[in-house]
Image 1 (cartoon, rainbow, N blue to C red):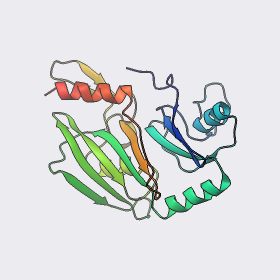
Image 2: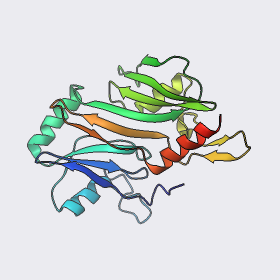
Image 3: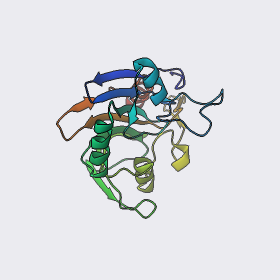
Image 4: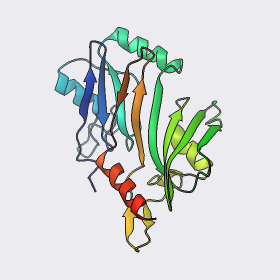
Length: 217
């Protein structure tokens, strides 16, 4: 199992407007309260500013434990455009997750408010395992922890997500223990209204969890 603090980001794409970065789990998108202390986690925007020797504008964020695609703007104009797109829900985001339970049907639409705000998530089952399933998730709104909250409320907490009731360990049929060291959530693709679409392959830890669950049938 990879150490989620040891991985480094990679640049997936760039043009005159955007940098598209693959964020490893364990990294913050922007500095947190303790980011300047010695034990603080690494920060993606600071890595990008250092490696590109350029100003960087943040357009959105994903959780520290979540891996996957993050879009950054190269100019103030691109930043303003991205902000408008995200506010108008014109950016299409797709996540992959591993969750407990059995979905029972190919598609689940969740429309439940989070902290009083309307929130919508669509969940598509990709593979079913004896101890959970792999899903493709389409958040239609952008609330904090939206996927994690919506899935947990439906009885499908994400593996590794102890905050919302997801297990960090699963006992397999051969009596071995599968340890899920972080929230099993990956931002796999992002599409802009311009038609530009970016993809990020599953990280090593996510692939290992899937392989183990496939064999545990």
